[in-house]
Each structure stands twice: as structure tokens, then as C-alpha cells.
Image 1 (spheres, rainbow, N blue to C red):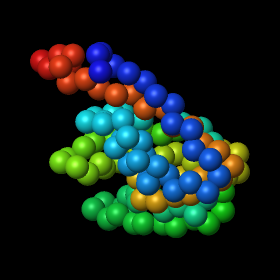
Image 2 (image 1 turned 90 degrees about the vertical axis):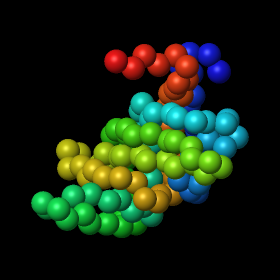
Image 3 (image 1 turned 30 degrees about the vertical axis):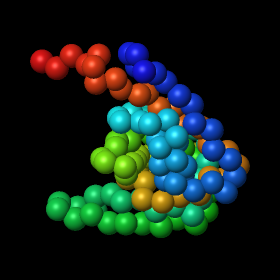
Length: 125
């Protein structure tokens, strides 16, 4: 890989999002990548977020929500891959929920844009 490379990972109805991200990383020998954007819908998902000072809460949702934004990274340690995707989702207009995606299933379809980083091309100051 030379420089930065971008991929669009297209997922279909019923796909397990975390499993597909790990599979993508393994199949493409990913060392480090960043989620730059995403679109689509998910259901049967769980997110982790802040409930208050020093408190984290996991919340599960069954009904479909639309993706507003994604961020985070996918990294490799040894032979294991670790997606850390933060999501912002909405179900009705302007009300949104945000958090770290722990699990989720694609509703209809979903696209995730991933930018791979070549550490040989990084400038660290």
C-alpha cells in the first residue's frame, strides 16, 4: 500500500456490522484505518455512552435508526482486529443518539467509508 487508500465497505440487510468490519480488515490486511463517513440504517444495536460524570451506560435498541455520522478507527493487534466505531443515529427528525457501537445489524443496506493509513507516509511532529 502506498500513501492513503480509501475503501467503501457496502453491507447488506442482516449483516453483523462488527463482524463484517473485522472480516474486511482481515481480508485486506489492515494495520490501521479510520472511519470517515457512513450511511444507511441499523437495527438490533447496542451503544455505549456517557450517562454522567464517570458513568458509562450501555443501551440496546431494536427498531431501525438512520446513520447520521460515523467516526473512529479499526486497528490490528497481532492477528486480531478491533473496530471502534462511534455513531450518531436518528429515528425521528432531529432527535439523535450517540455512542460507541458495541453490536448492530444492518437494516436494508449500509455503506462505511474507511481511510487506510500507511505509517511509512505519516509525519509525526
